[in-house]
Amino acid sequence: MATAELPAAYRRFWHEVGEGFPDLGGAASTAYYLANEQRLLAEHLPDLAHSSVLKTDLWDEVKNTRILQWLHGQGARAFGVDVSGPIVWQAGEAFPRGGLRAAVADVRRLPFRDGCFDAIYSMGTIEHFADPENALREMHRVLRPGGRAVVGVPNRWDPFLRPLLARVLQWLGWYGYGYERSFSRRALREMLERAGFDVVAESAILFVPGWLRMADLALHSYAPPLAWLTAAALRPFVWLDEHVPAVRRHGYLLASVGVRRRT
Image (cartoon, rainbow, N blue to C red; front, side, top):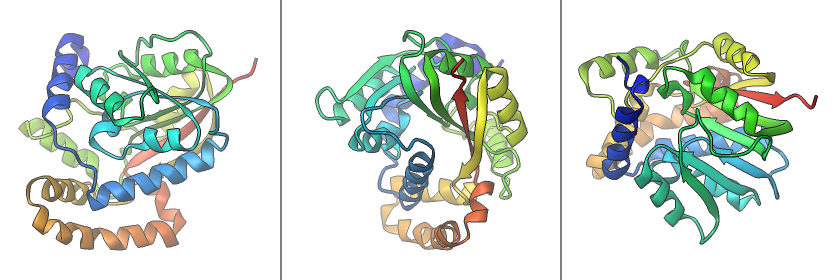
């Protein structure tokens, strides 16, 4: 049975990950990831000042890009949930006092009233559940009419075959992120529509081989003097992303934008 089908085991897994996983901030591929996220959100959530934004996990605020801190810096009111108590505590400590309103909670059962958020950002969250549509329905519920959700999941048709790599690593027990699925663009769109969203944009981020991202994080964490090797290997993909926008659509994380209907 998948980890995602066992709520207690799932929470325990992420509790342990929250306590022991290395900080990936500062890696060259993390800087690339952050730049992609900033561009994505600036394009699709243009009215950030004074908006209430919910992030459906807080992993990135402790271990990765700190994108919610960037949103807070743009004037947004930052909210977040995570199933890991250590992650929630560490994320709160990283923000200015009172800058983050966070709760230990499951995205499939959000502890918020209906229609209370202007925007939701969910990148790399729902693929870790066996029932991602429940998470999307909850996002739809807490989003105000006219509000936007930017939802990202692993791209099943990634040209560099990252889903296959992730599956092999999961089978070997070497994948540090637990249970994970991948989706086609059509499957993501249909899930959003069934949850009640109107899909108004489809994109992707991180046009880079998954193995290169993993290698960069490994060197950054465990052999910093060698991290320049993967940083150099990453530069052609950064250049392509900046100068050939068409490649962005084939990134290994799909990103679709759903709007809650006003009626």
